[in-house]
Image (cartoon, rainbow, N blue to C red; front, side, top):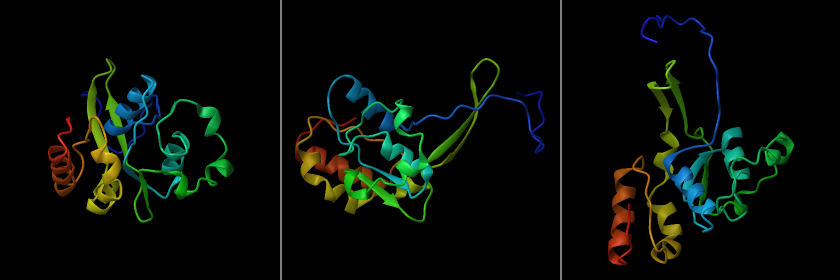
Length: 166
């Protein structure tokens, strides 16, 4: 990697696309252990946002994100109704969060470029919309890429209701 000059040229490589994000990955792991969870998040009104929505159950309880049989038809993706996506805020003027991770020949991370602006849409109003679910949760797991006001609100709710949070 260090011997290559980053001069705007195209270089041979392998590109892999997958769903991710700390919160989504943890929710997926919890689901794989046989427990439902509510993923509160924001996505853009774009193909990636619809693909994420399609990879999650009707009530946005995470299910197998690797079932690509369900996300191969774009016409099917366009039928997702926002009313079926509990916990998810679709943001019309933002792209769904994405990261480009550049690895070297050994698989070590050399560079990450992230577009995480849509996370700023996870705000007080979205959290309060799900307050009753949050305060009944046995545990709250928070992605630290949220606005500070949102993090403080979630931690305040957790503290008031004596819910462990990580």
